Image (cartoon, rainbow, N blue to C red; front, side, top):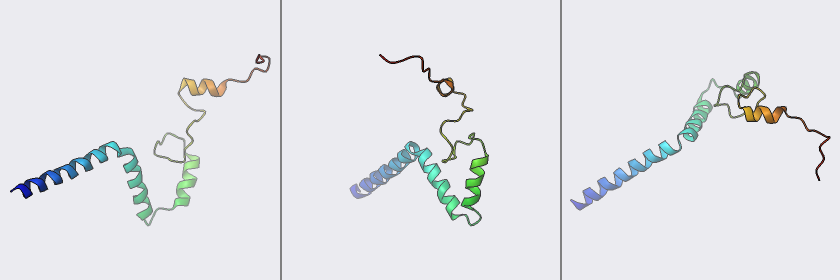
Length: 93
């Protein structure tokens, strides 16, 4: 009876560990699974995907080759830092 109890506890531990890893690494695992699905899809052409990403905007967050900072950003810090110019009249001491 002790062997069955030990086996059930071990199986429950493995299942709970698997669930914890799935929850903790969900974004990374989803992107990896999507990449595997694309690579196994016979109709997927990587050349089409590269040309499509250069013509679309960066609203798609799943695009790994999309630029991180764009001029169309709604973030005021990014917009302010990208629009400021260097003032040559101010010299460091």
